[in-house]
Image (cartoon, rainbow, N blue to C red; front, top):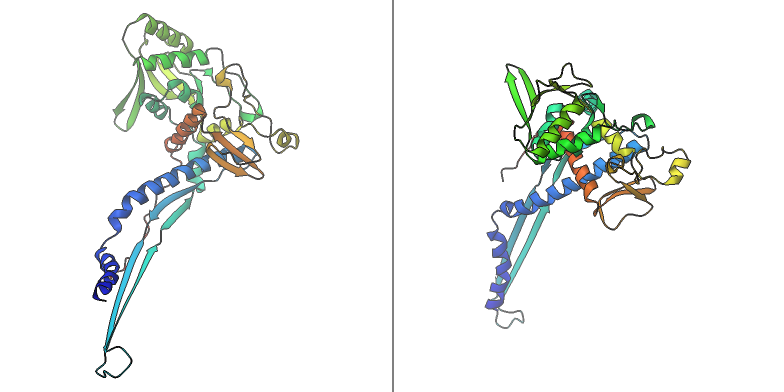
Length: 359
């Protein structure tokens, strides 16, 4: 009997020994919330691209704070009774033990809708040219970054699908992207920021490393961009369609809204949706001869949820997704999500006021 009582006490002692459960929840919560936020961010981005494809306005919701609250309570009760009457059929001694425990998990997640003039202006404001070249400086492929974020470089125009019609790229634009990518891979392109008081000037510097291939690419870049002969290595980075002189690199960059629309117009929507007037035909055919004329992100559509997808959302009666085996589209969407930060479309999170019980 005594051994049995000790066994009953063991769970209670273990419960009482858990003085703090906080540290053990950190690895689980951190990774769990990180994965959930990442997946929801991809889904939100894809859903807004699909909404734009059907003429809907994009809507964004930001998670401003996550607070996980845990509670662990235990209660132990014990009682006993002793009888002095030996003739009584009731045992001479009686002991009772009782235990109860409560575990509470109450996360508080705060959402902030992105609305108002500040957000709208950020969504419509072109991405700063210096931010674009900072991405290139960080190692992101120059050809893809410039193809997605720019409308023109020194008056040489990129392909555009705005307005429901496709404008082909100028003959020199794609060869320019190829040359800049090769120069980037050889370490021959760098960005230098110079600050003179409150004014910050960005300069794109072409390296002096000499090789036959580098010389050919440098000559091609200077020719297409119409750079002055006395400015062969350094260009001042400015925003605009055309440069004022031969020493500038004028970048006519896109806004975040334009980038979303360019991707949306390449979605492979069902043919009956186009026939019914729900949306327009794709402006970027998936079978275009030049891969750069194809959709920037290949978004597939179908009536059923796919079994293997990078991200998938439902819009009305149709599922839209990016295939998990389509690395090019996955990389494109992930890089595009960085542009939200470059466009400063977020909001400053407000720390919530908490009342923490002292007991």
